[in-house]
Image 1 (cartoon, rainbow, N blue to C red):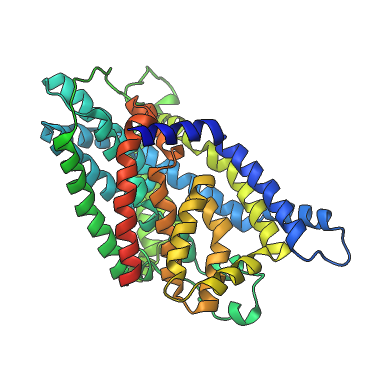
Image 2 (cartoon, rainbow, N blue to C red; image 1 turned 180 degrees about the vertical axis):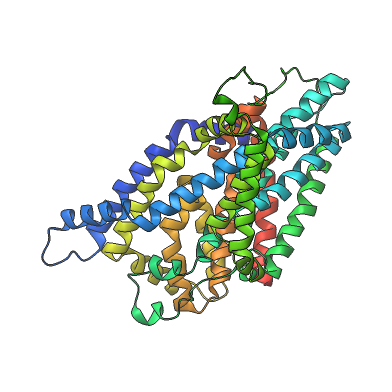
Length: 457
């Protein structure tokens, strides 16, 4: 398809690395703050902007947020590298006999798992797509491997509306909104709730209906495409990940390979989780700390011993490098926007052109655009979240709806933005141009469903 080749060419030619984009956005924000905001009377404008930037980079609360997001990705990846998950994936491939049932199986399971954890869903979908191709070549039937690969990526179009979504999980933390919105008008700040539970965002009727619609429409759409596309034999080596790297050990090394110790400590973590957070769970309050604590215990149990767990950590940590180095730059941008008053100016602009009905739609489309340049839900919440919250307060839009509109917009253009597809492409050995024709169509389908949901609810 010419359009996907054009898009891939444009991305390669004009879109630098995400780190370079973060630097360029930082410089652009500095220039805009210098040109369009009122400087403090007792400080040179440029030095004041640099001060706002430095304060934002080293914001303690936001650095905690960055580490939480890293752990969500890494622990999800660790889980999918465990032997029980490998057995599950191998078992699922037994039900595959052609491209049509392959895309249904891969897309449904990937979306269900991504609803729980996006890192887990991303790697699970990639490995499942790879194992489906291996099963096809072992059992002698042809498939359309790029379409199967695209099916393994669909979890990234529902993740921010799932349990590990950055914005919904952060606003469910007590006091987050108040500390996040310190520069807005006191009258507006008094309207901020202490927290927004998952019952109003992730587990709301509207979000569950939208998720259920995607869970039906996406596999159905993929199955229709599967009837028309060409198939061909695959030729791939067996993907083993980090599972088969056992070595001989002796002495104190036995502790690292003790299933009794590994599983035992995992059970301790899970027991502490339920003791500490049963009250929160009963009120549908789920925070990043809760998710990470539970996944840590579960990962230890599924891996069985510390050695297997640590090998998976070594492999999974590579995918978190972008968060580690880019998030502080996004926090610096937020610091400039808050300190200079840009957040208020931008929110006033949205208020002037939007209504209570159209603000969620503006938020959806702007979030989709921002995601092309800030390919991280956590980073996007840091940059765009204050604007969305302040605009919603001024127009009387329910905060849960505004936050979910941002989440939907952020996640849908993942089908166009190739950044988070890199792990999948590495595992499946596919190329971006091979899956883009299908992910672009999925982006259109998803956009229609999200817009209908935002208008109906």
